[in-house]
Image 1 (cartoon, rainbow, N blue to C red):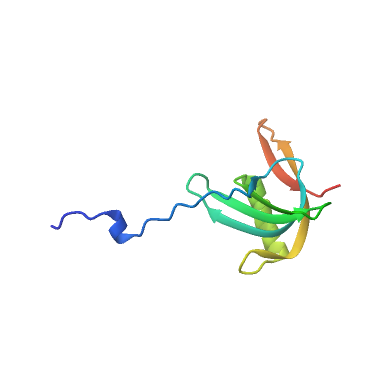
Image 2 (cartoon, rainbow, N blue to C red; image 1 turned 45 degrees about the vertical axis):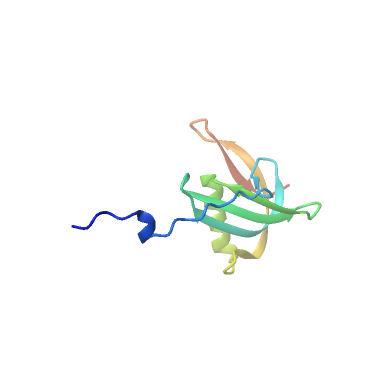
Length: 116
């Protein structure tokens, strides 16, 4: 029997990704237009999402990230209904307001609603 080999001989190690300093955590109270969505698997969480868009009032470009399950499910629905290209750019931009809601069990979570 041959001696065991290192895992990296079979599978190349993943490159460490540098955190994006211009991408902010999604928070309640933010109103913006979603233009691009990327949902990917996460080692720490089930999935994470990167969301690009622009401010509803100032049109300033914005970049957010989230691991919120309810938000990611809404993003998947948005992608399915609005359609998107290979780069995650939506065929139809979507206006949203991020709100914080309490579940029946008393836990807080984020969700999108229509902005006022």
